[in-house]
Image (tube, rainbow, N blue to C red):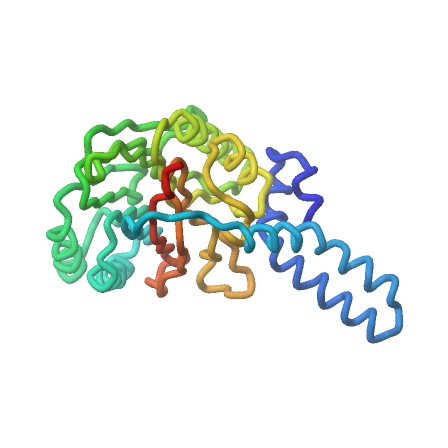
Length: 298
């Protein structure tokens, strides 16, 4: 709802409640319908006016156009929830989709033979990548068809164990900065602080990039939250509106509460031309799939 951007971005209750703005909008529509049916039109109008600012933002985003030269590739990002079964499901999707970049968080440390074999087949298709140990049981995997030139790790001072990665890729001779994240879920004030510390670092890295930049992963931050709005404004990443630059991804087991906390955002001349929610892997997160392209040079 519009008031969320006027509330303190670092308050835990704001972060939680604003995550479910879509559900709030649906309740406002239902309330307006019920009040109108009962003849209380002014009260119904008040509920509809709550939706007006976000509706205008979404309409403006839908009309925005971006000149694109050519498709660049596809990205696949998923939180696997430390599940070997999710590894098998994700591997099947990766073999079918053949993305150019893959970011997997909460990758299980121990795989059964079937999961190990399935992921090994996927890894064979990628010349570059890394495996990064994080908190116990929550390792990270990054796969790339493009050469990896440099990498840097960042850990929040308040709660290390979920490293954020700053990677530099060579995409057909053009540098691409990749910021790959899996932040702390804001379940307590210390975790909220640790997540926000990583988001601030990611915004600085993206803003400092002089060319193409890609931010992806489980941000544990809804596209409707004030913190996400701050990330977009400070980083310069492309996001015309919450709905236009996200897909609902969590919690997979509760469809009525789905909210977009897994993201793929681009900046520089790089643009996301399409975002899709992937098929369930059995994790509590749906994968996010995005197609990339480059803007026309002016």
